[in-house]
Length: 371
Image (cartoon, rainbow, N blue to C red):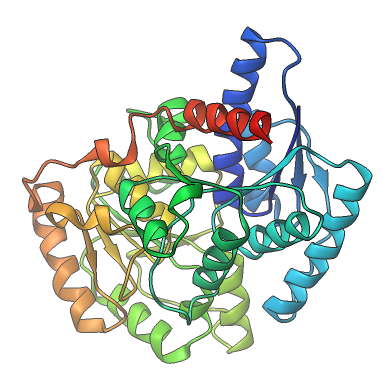
């Protein structure tokens, strides 16, 4: 059986690593059963956004394509679609696995669907119901052209049923929970912490990367103004998209205060350690919302909606948008109480038991064999 995985961004490489591990384990028990190749679209090409993930997670070397990293989302998607189609014609797999909700996701799904190659969408069924988000369009279209929908939560399965896709949907759990179990760094300080002299729960962690945040000056200004006023050290690994946007608007020398430490992007293991040791997290990332919940770290989501509604349980994740005062009010409570701000237990069972990779491989085998 020939299977091709396609991804191009940091979160996709982590999800891919879980599938690689699960497929390797299956092949250990059933030698030679699955030939699994990887394609990296090039969507994230900076070494700290790409190469370090393959090194840290022990991923085999992928076939690297050249994605367009400038221009419109449509141009980027079109270039990737054409490149992926060429790869599929050269090495036609029995199924293609696509991950998450990026331009790499939709490009690979469309390329395979047009060649009548079965498409498997891992992390299917998520909805923010905000069509202004590129990711929302990507995930909706990908779900509707996919043949097998591997869902991280039961809510995702129910959403697909409402869209008439229930017969293709199956709950497997969240591979990101698997990843924390496989690669977690319990009890370790990050190198950034050590350099800054910050111990566990002595800082807040901030990430901003979504286009609707970085490319909207008024939205971004409201968030940055709040960061200036939060009375706790802040570690801020700055995404290349935001750094580029600040350079374009003559804010390259941005100063948010002595308490805000802007650092370069970090690898996956370093980021896990930063999250695990944070007093709280502020982010517009879907992945960090989940990881914060998995680790029991309070999170303020810098958006007005979330596709991960399970994380809102017990107040572990709060939607604070981009209004300065709203962010400040929530952050000050967390500065004071930290992880004691909620006594509600987390419901990790809603994301599976850390066996999503194994379950996904079983479902993929079942689908391909039935074809």
